[in-house]
Image 1 (cartoon, rainbow over the protein chains, first blue to last red):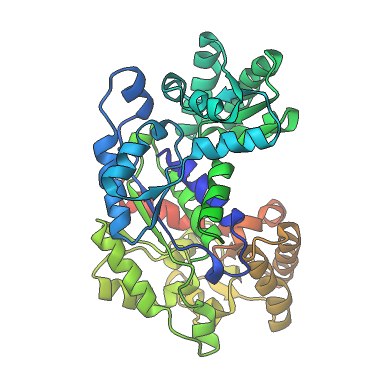
Image 2: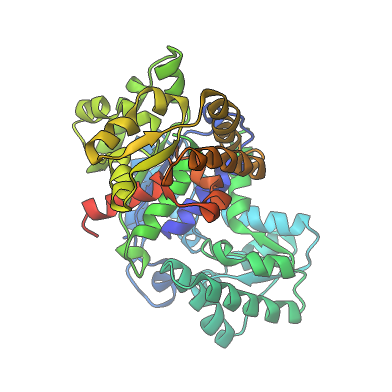
Length: 219
Length: 219
């Protein structure tokens, strides 16, 4: 949904595919519609619902021959079950795939770096319950001043160095609060998580979704 | 056509778009069909033509509502006029956009780093005539051992460091032969041209296509 996040996801999908020539890669169709209403605003602030536009996009993809629907936007997963049902498409749950990875890594308590929408929809908390992993989040001020700001800097293709520093700051508070590892639970964040990933263990929801796609398609 | 090149092009398009939120970006549909027959093999070795698959892809994109057809593959431009005509779509010529940039940079003689197919089809030579810019290429052995190998390493998502060194080696021979600047005239090459671009002036055909799209759509 964020266009840079979409480009980053497609690159991750290609890198996760065991292929030795173009011809061995997965045939992919991408519908990148940045006009889809903001997911966090819909969840938190009563903004317009993204569901009609998401269903229309999914139906276009199905008409293009897509067999598997994936949405490289964590927050949009609040709406994805409804969308996939309406479009009658099989989908992959990025949040489940990411939490499965955190559990496999032996984490008991994970720090979640996500949008306010993903937090409010408790998407990672529900997955955490399934995997017996506790989730912790930045306090409201840190969420706003560090995480939300880093995400909007990436969406604006603005100062990435600053976005990276803000993300590292938020991550440090979560490690201080006892997180065994961190999850970049917004698909914009892996674009600026380099320094954070050098300082601590970070699981990237984009890479987890890409790996889950490749397994689902048995590449 | 190369999936990593496609991801890289979409990222370049997003970065070239003056936007401050997701909602201001260009609605984009990407048909990434890695099974399209190899363009260089079709031009040089009498391999199967990519034209039917390219036309089918362009028609799918038009059915998805695409108004402008772009193909982030230099070699495919040998076939693009036929494809665009068959699909009745407006298109942008990446090679013309790139040579226009080289001419604007004041180059009299440009070194072309491209596939054997792009060379054989003389795509950059024809554009050079239009802009009064001379084109020079690596000798056959350097083309094969350095350029072709660097391209296939990127397509295999294999050793990027080696690919970068091979590209720098080929670039050095062109500078030695009097090139004023170099063009990465294969969309895989900008993925590994960092060192080369630090050593000399490099014009990236991917960035030129992205900029031309944004102007064409008057963003």
